[in-house]
Amino acid sequence: MSRLNLIRSVYTRTILLLTLAVLIVFSVLGLVYYGIVSLEAVRLQNVRLLNSAQAISEVVSENLNAAGEVTNREIASYVNFTARSTGALIWVINHKHEIILYSNLPGYVIEKLERSGPGQYIIDGKYLVTRRTGTTGINQSGDFNGLFAESGARWLSAVWPIASATGFYRGEVHVHYQQNPSSLASFLMTGSLVASFLAAFGIALIFIGILSRNITRPIRLLSHAADRVSRGDLSVRVELPGSRSGTDDAAGKLVADDLTVLVRTMNTMIEKLENQERERKDFISSVSHDLRTPITSIGGFVSGMIDGTIPADRFMHYLGIVKQEVARLQMLVNTMFEGNLMTNDRTLNMSVFDINQVIKEDVIGLEALLSEKQLGVQTDFAADETGRLLVLGDREAINRVVYNILVNAIRFTPVDGVVALTTRYLGKSKEIEVIIEDSGMGIPESEYPYIFDRFYKIDKSRTSSGSGLGLYISRTILAAHGQRITVGRSDLGGARFAFTLAIP
Image (cartoon, rainbow, N blue to C red):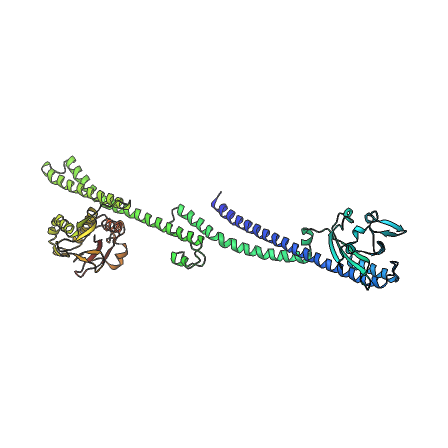
């Protein structure tokens, strides 16, 4: 699958899943609403049926003689009118169990009744509810004790007793209402509900589209950036909506959700890759320059000896130069190896040693370079009562730090200049500070942020000697000790390097 299709599938899946979620929510709400409305409709219908039964009972009670006959024939019209208005079956039953008035009797009901005469029916006593229960009125739901079982429908029944002024039972009024078969589908097909559902669902789809785009847009940006990075473009950055440049500072002002963190992590990763690529190019450029000069010299001298350009009596002189260039190559390779070793988390061999003694040993080792440029050395060493300044660290590694900084100071100090070495306690903290200064031309302040980078040289033309690893190695060693190194301007006019060490 192509990257574009992948992006589209993520966007499509997001919309489909959110749409499905909305449909499920709407369906659940529809079912709940349907249940509530259905229950309320049944309750209201029961109330209407019971009220109708009570009203008919009161009218019939006033017009019912002792023989159980209705004396007012207009009551039949009233019963039929009530039946049409309610859509129910209405039966008026006297104390003899005779159905003396009715709006309708279904055939399957007539089959269960006894005939007392032409068009006259007697109802079984098991269907006389209020006489048996002694209540003033009752609602039932179902098939009314099997009377309407053959209809296959559910019935709502209301029964109200016909009583005399003294409260004597004189019969009862039945109102039976057949519930129409309904379903959620038919309920949802009502116009108002369908319109409301469609309007709400349309609004939900609009929000789903906006939400899906906001969710998948960072993913699309990440995919696009990853594609450009895979093609070698390390200048790309993922810019979140609302940010100015996609930087961490801009992204940090947005909501710190998972996608934002992912974008910022992606930008950081790309920046690291860009830095590594820049360092790789610097490394190639630095190594090319630093190796080319001695190799060219060695090749030229050896070729001259072979083809006779250099006479035999000068062989020893030029072999000495070749030896010197080989030593220079060896030192360069060792320095690069050490830089790689520091990067790979070299294990420190911690011990307690005298830092003043380490500095003195390095000065003695560099005496030839100091004498060559006729440099003066100023020292100001702090010491305890034994004349030593004990520190905790890897002696060999710290010796390398001092040596690297001291070599730089000698290299960039003019003839007859001064190199100053200082050690001192740092107030009440359990640290000491080592300061190495020179009277050279110093380091521009704009270079301070980069001076400790790997392969970095102030001289952009790379005509200066050195690998650009010395200060990088020094900072790496001190960082492994949990210490710090700084650069600044010396009162002598040149550079000032200061680093800290722990006191045991």
